[in-house]
Each structure stands twice: as structure tokens, then as C-alpha cells.
Amino acid sequence: MVACALRNVVRDKPDLNLGAPEGRGCPSGDFAFSWGKGKLITKDKKGKVTETTAKYVSVWKKQADENWKIAVDTMIPDPPEKKKQAVPQFGFIGPG
Image (cartoon, one colour):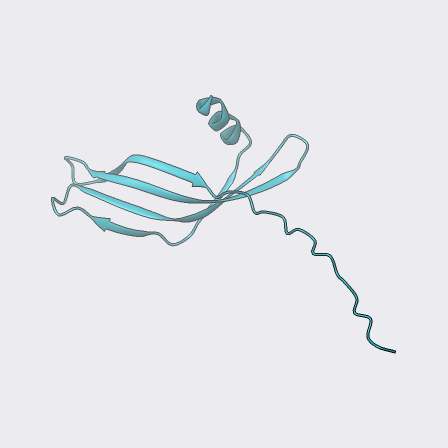
């Protein structure tokens, strides 16, 4: 199910905008991780645009040739914003 959803997102050619990441390295020097916030913008077949904000975490592993590759990468969508409920307005009727 997740693979199907991911396949649909990739097929629709999303626009992914990532904010400046933060990161840390492990004392061993062979792993590091980064995290940040981003926005995924997709368009369906009818042209409807959907923007999803999310947080991401990436785990990097140092390779034998000293290059770094992502070992684990995940993005967690933020919950949808709750619509504000209308607050009833009551008029004040003073003495008069």
C-alpha cells in the first residue's frame, strides 16, 4: 500500500522544497543524521494542486571510499490544519 502511494506521488512529478537541514555526526565517524522541514507540492490528473508540509530525517552512512550515502530517509507529513470554527457574534443591547 505504501509502495503504491509512493509510486503515485513520484509519477505525478512532485516539487519538493526542503528547508535548511540540521545535523549531527556519531562519535564513531561512520554515521550521521540530518533533519528539517519541507513542503511537497503535487498536482493530480485534473490539475488540482496539493501542498503538504512535513518533517524529514535522513541517516547517512560513510562508505569504504569515504563518500556518504543515505541509509534511511523518511518524511512525516504534518497533520492537516484544523479549520477554525465560526464563533457566534452576539450584539450588546444597552439601556436606552
